[in-house]
Image (tube, rainbow, N blue to C red):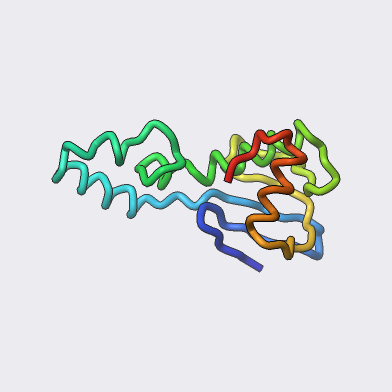
Length: 124
């Protein structure tokens, strides 16, 4: 079974109790924004951006990789029972994790819960 999120594609293998998470690399969208940058050079800073968390070319190409890597790092730092273990991460290009049930929680309360268990190191 395959699920698509905003920044990652998740392959679920409940029979093997595994999940594989891959980043969604949006090459076409990045190319569209490059074309916009070429047409409006005054907006280069906006599209090139210093982080991957804004509308930027970096976000299109690397946000899923960063999310995978941070999720792996977060698990190893906290080792909290709330989280599914990350068995392996290949530099954020593929995460191998234990299969678990979907969290049925409102987005805001979910983030508040994550912030509390991470000592407020997690931001939405």
